[in-house]
Image (cartoon, rainbow, N blue to C red; front, side):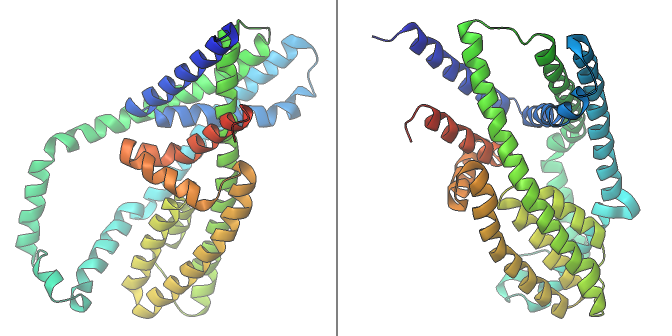
Length: 334
């Protein structure tokens, strides 16, 4: 027979699984990540502030002030990133350049491929109009969805700040089910922290090396790529996604290099292949050290989660894999 403790623990697992499924099904992942990010930053900075305040009330006020400061800084950083991406045409102009590069590549493509693509302006326009008519409902919802996502992120940041303050305000004992649920939540947060820190290190190294290549090395060789700073920033952002992020940034860099010259594209391809090979060692050392997982394990979990939940599944897969592994270890099953 199951004991009361077994029933409580099992119920907490079911509630945790239901919560994760609800977040993915209701597209609340950006809000969840925003909450955990703010919560993590408050906890990281809390020891520095706590030393200057004595007593429960002082620590509570210090944590509340710190939480407000963290939310303001994260919001400001987000606005700065958006402004940098859109400065001087930014991302929009870069996409246009990539489209022009792909179009101009028709001359070197196999004969059968250009024949299946629109070959002139009017035909391309007709295809675009047809696509817009077919996807008009989705496009009308795009602006609304962006606004809803922004609201979820803001609410998530506020919730993360409130949770950090709440821990200081009432650190008392909890009922058995609440205690078991908090164990699940803290273990999930620990997995988020490990994956975020590991991918942050890899993203920083990747973006730094890419910046040296695009902004220093290539200009010394007389090759100047457009949108250099934008590509470095995109590399840093998408680098937070294991494996997939590198594919996105590498494709952009090679296509922009091709718009300059085939030599620049070849040089970029060689550089990125070498960098990608080096990142296998980085993943094994950094990610493997943080969550005790190999690159193929993370990739397999991402493929599986993408098939179930789309891009949201890709984003949460490394965290969920690390969390499941931590739960199995805690239960002494692996």
